[in-house]
Length: 150
Image (cartoon, rainbow, N blue to C red; front, side, top):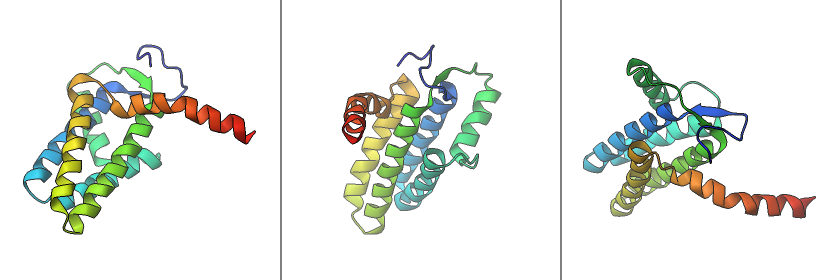
């Protein structure tokens, strides 16, 4: 995925994406030390808004946009579909964390939260989007399913 030349018509700002991932890391780290189930529920809601709607209601995205503007970050357009796929994986992960935490399986919830901290941290600090790489790996499978359905 070439970050300077998007291949999809829809793009997102990489600076805002990385800042959103940073806020996700901060919240999850706070959750690992207290109130994990409530933070996971909040993140699940936020990931759902970003991954499945076009509503501008995501608190983390709004905070990241404001922070990028405050820091005068130059917009860096990148392909939106892989990022949206990654956000949807984040929704699944936070839903699992919340489900495990609310059912008393706190140790398992913590493990999933720690994995998500690692993934979001890679995006925030290194610009490595694991979900985007998974999206890219799944494209041949998607094409194969489309060709058999036709």
